[in-house]
Length: 327
Ligand SMILES: [Zn+2]
Image 1 (cartoon, rainbow, N blue to C red):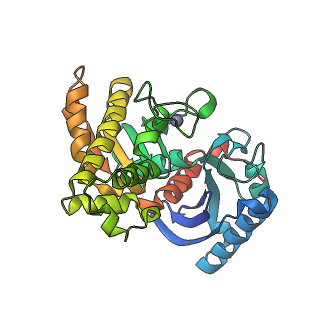
Image 2: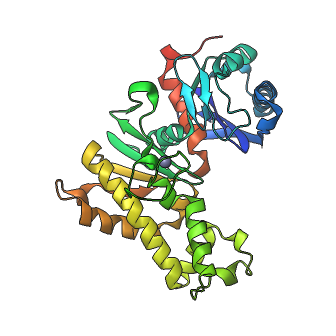
Image 3: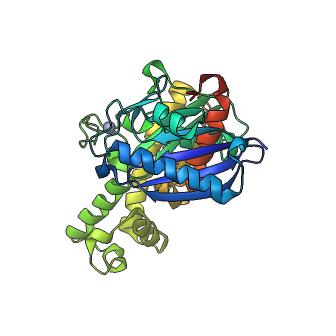
C-alpha cells in the first residue's frame, strides 16, 4: 500500500485522515477544533498529537506512512513551508514555520498547499475530475475559491496563487468583497451572500416560504434552507438560485475562454443545491460564450464531498516526493 496522511487545517476544525493512495480511500480519520486563539504553537502541538493518535488508532506502523500533506485557508510559501497569511486565524499566522515544525515533530516529509487547491487536486485525482487534462474547480462555501489543473499538475502560477476563481470581478460597480475588491464572484455566490439575499427578501416583505422554514428566526437562513424552499416551488428562492447560477455561469464563462477546461467541477457546501445551480449555469454559458463550442465543456458536481481536501493533500504530497520538507 502507498499510504500518506492528508490534513486540513481549517479555521474551525483540523481534519486529518490516513489515505491509501492505491485505492483513493480514507482508511482512518479524525478531527478536533482548531482554537486558533490559543496561538500557533499550541495549534501545531495539537496537530502533532492528533496525527500521532490517528496512526496509533489505525493499527498501522509509523514506518508505513510515507509523508504528510497539510492544507490551510490562506496564502502559503510553498517552497519554505511557511504560512504567510491565514486571514481567519487569530494572529493571521504570518510567517509561521508550519512545514518544518510538523516535519521535525512527526519525523515525516511534509508539504503544504492552500485548502481550495487541495480540494481541486482531490477531485482531479479521485473524484469528479478524474480522466481529464484540463479541469477547473469552484469550491463554493463560506468563501468561493478554486483551482486549475493542467496536464495532471495544479496550475499554481507566478507566486503560487493562481486559481483564486472566486475573486474575479463579475460586476464592475458591484458589492464589496471580503478581499477588499468590489464585484467579486464571491460577493454574489458564497453561502453568506445567499443567506443575506434571502434575509433581505424576507425583510422587504416578499411572499416566500423561507421565513416559515426558519420559524421567523432570520439568523437561521442558510443556503440549504433557500434550496429547500426553491425545491418546494418558492418563487423568491428560485429567483435567488437563478441569480447565483447566473453569476457563477459568468465566472465559469470567463474561465472557459481564458483556460479552455474540459470539465468544471463544483465543490463546497453551496454546490449541494445541484440542479438549482447547474441549470442557470449552463444557460448562462450558452448566452455568454461564442468563441468556442461551450456545450462540450462538462459542468459537474463534486463526488468526494468533505473528503476532497484530505484525499487531495495525501495525493499532492505523494506527487511532490522530491520537493517535500524533510525532517
Ligand atoms: Zn474578492
